[in-house]
Length: 262
Image (cartoon, rainbow, N blue to C red; front, side):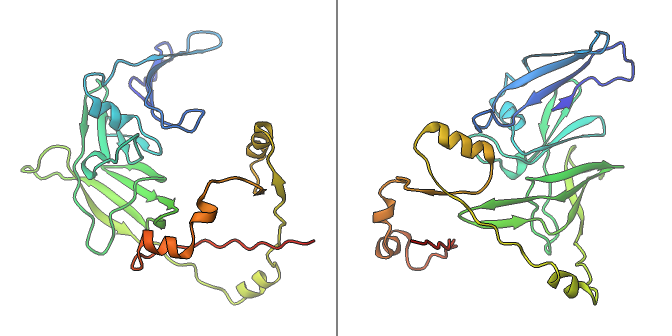
């Protein structure tokens, strides 16, 4: 969500745009809406309607309707950084885009960070406008195929001000590495006096859609018993996986410990 007409005059309605996000069914949303807050009404009214912005360009609309992106006002523009879009992957040249108050849209090119730092993952980050720069902190993701990744520090994103540089190009100028916490002499004593608490995960059987809905609403771990998850239970033998995946491919294995009593 970002505004397109913020003013200090309370008599003028505030306007903006809502784009992207997830639907109630956890599907990437591609809708785009204008919102308008009438602060003269009692109580104030918030109105939504389908937006006509970016209708002339599928690429522009796709780059705006994201999930997990950051929107920050910087130098009289709204910058959209990172996130994901439906049915495609954002290229490096599309990860950062800018929208001015008249709705003009353009993507922002950026150079790679220094060789000692990886390119940041622009998902789950916090972005702050600081003077002439954008400060990017945090950022991480978990993928069951590729594991966990998180940015190692903070990044400073600064516009290039050289006269011969194209307009709207950013470059990473500094990476701030995190400082490890220094252990104190009594840290081990504190940790040993507070041992981990074991929690039993209940076993349940789902017999109806209502049972499954109650599990989702409770939002606590359970072990589902007697579930038919298809032929993989019999088909995925060691020999089958070795043939299909290949003996040279590195994989991450997840183990679950189960103890049953009669």
